[in-house]
Image 1 (cartoon, rainbow, N blue to C red):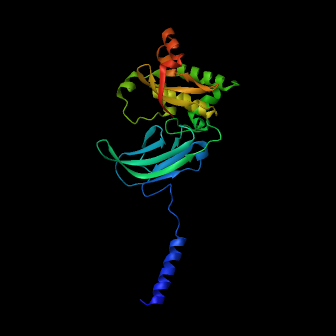
Image 2: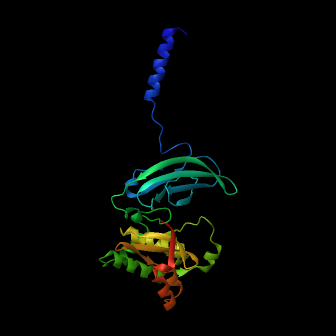
Length: 268
C-alpha cells in the first residue's frame, strides 16, 4: 500500500471512530437501566441476556447497605427506589454461576440528587407495586375520603388493613426466598404474612401521594416487616400485622407503640 493510501486509510479510520456513537453507560448485552426519573429516586432495570439462570440486581450506596433483588429473565422492566438518600450508588446485575456464587455482567454508577428527600417513598417499586387503577389505589381513595392530613390518611389505611386482613400462618411456614407481595391478590384473598400487610399499607398510602417506607428488620427478636410514616423530624412506626394478628392485646399495643422495639435493616 502506497504512502498516500496509508494516510487516506488512517484519515478515514479516524473519521469513522470520531463518528461512532459513544457506548451507552446504562446498557450492554446483559442488562439495561432507565435513569430518566433518577431525580425522583426511581430507576427501572431489565435483564436482556440469554442465560437460563437466576439473576439479581444489587444496589449499593457508597459506604452504605447492599440491597439485593431478584430480576425476572423475561426482559420485562422492573422499578426500584433508591432509599438510602442522596449520594453515589453502584448498580450491578449479577448472573448465578453455582451454589451461592454470582458473576457481575453489568455495572454502572448513579449520582442521586433529590429536590424532596421523601420522593422515593411515594413511588411504586418491586416490593410496593401498584398503579392508579389497581385495587389498592381505588380502595385507598375510598378509605381516606374525608381525611385532611397525612396522619389521618395513615390512620384510616392502617385501620382498614388491620380489620380486613387475617394472618396466614400456613403461608408464613411455607413462603420461599424471593417472595414478592402481590398487593391486589392479598386484598382479594383477605390474608397474608407481615410482608403482605406492610406492602398493602404502603401501596395504599403511596397511591394517595403519601410518603411512607416499608421497613424490614427486627421487632424484638422476630425478623419482621412494618411501615413508617414521617412525623416531625422522625418517623412513626405502624405495625398492622401484630395488631391484626393479636386482636388488640394490650401487651401487643404497648409493644408496637414503643419504637425502641424495632430495628430496621432495609427500607423500601
